[in-house]
Image 1: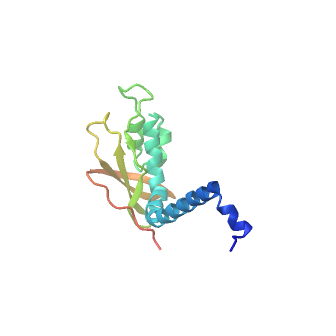
Image 2: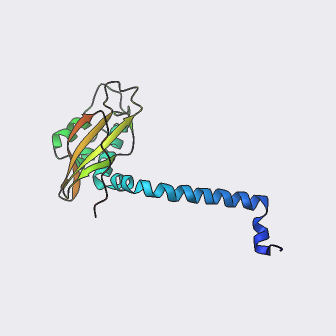
Image 3: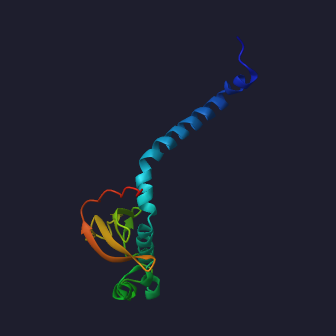
Length: 159
């Protein structure tokens, strides 16, 4: 039995290799989707995005109190972060970090986990910080932070 012209096209080595790569990529993508829903939800939470914005400001060594103010309940914290220091302007004030994620939440509070990396230049830095945030007038603000040695699990998507 002779294969049909459509099937013969797939017997060419280049097409077979391309098909194999495409099927492998699709399989990997589908397999990874099931395990990332929880983390994607936790990373996309507005509280996690707010904390990451503050980290980006610190990394860029922003010294404008108005840039920090929307992200903190206390204006004193925003002012302290913006103050001049002995470190030359433009020097990152935090080590690298993994994408922040929410580990626990209610309708008005969320705990945001930051796992630090690249801490060689920051020897006294903790392995993990958990930032307590709350919803204040439609925006997520940081109200406190604690250091910990292990990262809590990401929050489950709420139904």
